Amino acid sequence: MEFQHTSVLLEETIQNLRVKPDGIYIDGTLGGGGHSYHIASRLTGTGRLIGIDQDEEAVLAAEKRLEPFREKVTIIRDNYCNAEGALRHIGIEKVDGIVLDLGVSSYQLDHAERGFSYQHDGALDMRMDVRQSVSARDIVNTYSEMELYRIIRDYGEEKFAKNIAKHIVLARKDRPLETTGELNEIIRASIPAKMRKEGGHPSKRTFQALRIECNRELEVLKNSLDGFIEMLNPGGRLCIITFHSLEDRIVKTAFRENENPCICPPEFPVCTCGRVSKGKVITGKPIVPSEKEMEENRRAKSAKLRVFERRGSE
Image (cartoon, rainbow, N blue to C red; front, side):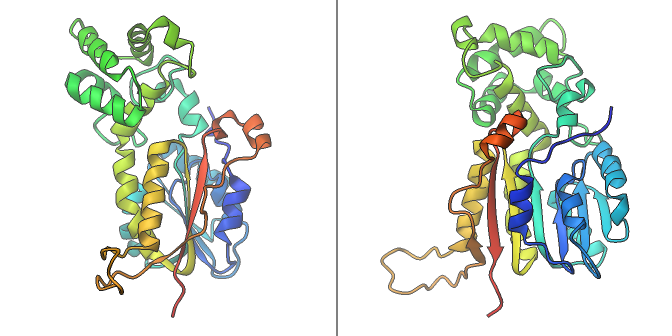
């Protein structure tokens, strides 16, 4: 099965990145190379693109897709949270732009063996990087009822989190849960029939929660944003596409705090904390997909693009 992923908000992201032909850019979620292809095609001379992804299948697909630009492209298999060290290793400290597309790829969702989708029966896996030891199976079978409840409530924003956690713990007493199909049935039985008809598939929120926990997605995002802004050259931009409110809130907060980091009490006539603005938020409100894009790609529906620009030299 070929690694495929339709890049959401592609034109809007490339436009806001403002690619300079001789610039250095990072695609921190390389995927199948959708955004990277359009960045690399605009580079000339000393222009360079560094693509990062922890998924081996994504890396292999991107290498193939970006073959025409191989002299300008460096691909690194790693988590984007390690970007700073990985770039320093190849002699790069500052860049002109960074892209993060935080969505799960179509390949990952559609490939049953990866265990990301509630639409296909497969192993309970959900690891973006199969080298890591903890999978969704481990979470479902070893976490306490209270831990499962907290994850499903906080990361899935699921109103029936308590009941779902209780049913998971009851079911695993007989034997370990192994497949997405088994988990689907437990979630379905935990939600009142009348409520199952509302808000899409009943397992959507719980699967999201388990995936976030398995891959430490929110922790990784939160811990990476300040460092990415520091890596930008003056005028460089950080473009981030999120797909649910938890991610978007983290990005919105980090951008706002980097734009206005002052922690002085409001009544102080002048700033005394010494915290200096790192730049400005370009997107007061996030950029969302057009009606046309949402019709053509249902996975674009919840996407939001936020952009931050590094402060220029004084």
